[in-house]
Image (cartoon, rainbow, N blue to C red; front, side, top):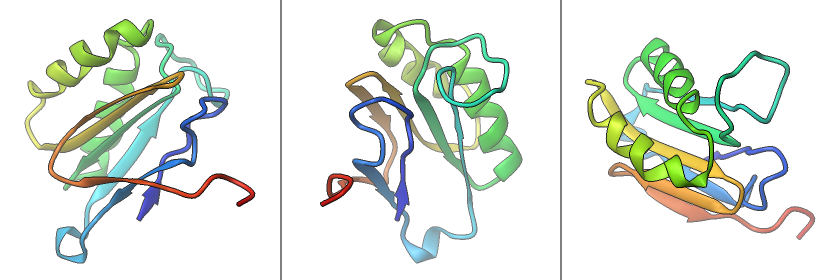
Length: 114
């Protein structure tokens, strides 16, 4: 299970991705325009990418996160992810909105402090 951290989003640490053992090893990386000190050109709270290659997951998460300026961009970014060969799944969180594309199960996690 991988929990998605999305800073101050109400979905942060409330959503997880179940990764079956037979799908490992794999790479799962997140990029954000609202969390952390790195320079970002986007406004996503989190763009998480699952791929066989960790380097590909990292590069794709950054590239896709840079395309998010508002929650209205979520579907366009999910569609754009289809043009990147080798991606298995993509999650996009902007505020209280989440978009998901891929064969893995999203799982609701218990509220923090519960």
